[in-house]
Structure formats: structure tokens, C-alpha cells
Image (tube, rainbow, N blue to C red; front, side, top):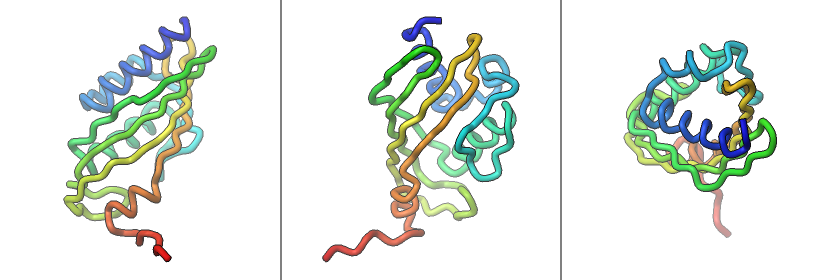
Length: 142
């Protein structure tokens, strides 16, 4: 696949699996031995672990929507800068629903190998998320 094919592939994954909540698509487009380099708490390796992580986010933020802001591809790797927005309507990582709206930024490095989503390394503003949910204080201003 070309770099542009890989970018299109990851864009389609985000739209279909995350934004449209089609977790069944994971069985066709994600490698069975998928590796998350920075796993979500409780995430096991493989497809099932990826389903668990995404389903946990959907449970906590059922209206979650990701927006891609920028992408760079090189070889098998696709780097995407994104934001996601959602309303905290369900339990998320042990935090009961707050009904607060959040907006979180992140960067993810994904690997597309043999026409399958094979690896991922996601970095999100978890501190900002916790502050927006009200479970972590904002820094004091001097």
C-alpha cells in the first residue's frame, strides 16, 4: 500500500469504528495479533483488547466524535493529530458519569501492515480530560 493508501485506511478506521461505533469491523481490518504500545488500562493484546479500549470510551462518552487535524505517513506508519469531543454520560475508568462535555487532543502513531491495522501508540491529553471532568484540579494561577 502507498502512504496515501495507509492514510486513507486509518481515516476509514476512525470514521467507521470510532465515530460510527462499528466494532465488528475490527475483525476484518485489524490484525489478530494487534499491539497497542501504550495500552488503555485493562487492555489485553490483540483485536479483543482494541475492542475493549474503544468500547470503554464509547461507554463513557457515547456521543464521542473524533476529528483528524493533520496526518503524515512514512512507509507503514501513519501519524495523526486529532481531537475528540464527547459528553461524559457513562462510567469511564472508574469515574461515574458527570454529564460534562469534554474536548481532548491527541497524537497517534499507527502501523498498517499487510493491509491490516497492526500497531498503535496513542498519546492523549489525559490530564486535560481529568481536569475537564472535574476529578483533577486545574493548576493554580499566580
